[in-house]
Image (cartoon, rainbow, N blue to C red):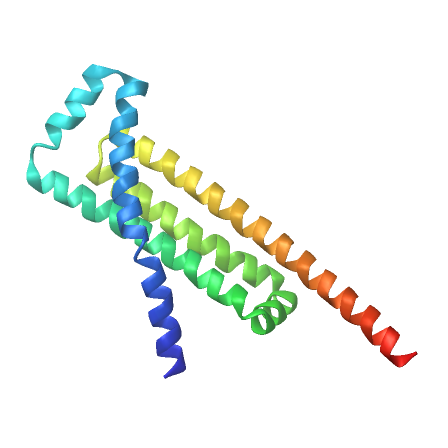
Length: 169
């Protein structure tokens, strides 16, 4: 029962990825106007007049970001469970790194393969750029969070050691 609750929490947290993906797709279309010019933008928008193309693009980018957020939520969950994650990472550092890289690589490959068939070259490039930026920000955020948490734990442990030293004397 507990595993089902954990899985449900991961999926529920990851559902935010769907609207974020759709928002980033719309930002890609808008930024295409400023980067490539009005003619390219008009060509891309004209292709969206086909409702099937629009729906397929929205579903595709939503699912891609949903999968990406599932991976992020999964690693956040494993990071919360420090005992097992630290023990596994210490015993199998290469496997841990390989799992992280494979998860990210699978999402990038899905984005590239499906994106090349669903999106035009311009929008596909914009989506890959936005995906890389989001991935970079997620990595920086998790690194900073991890550093801050480890510093806080060290400070708390230091204060506990000082208090225990005072109590024993």
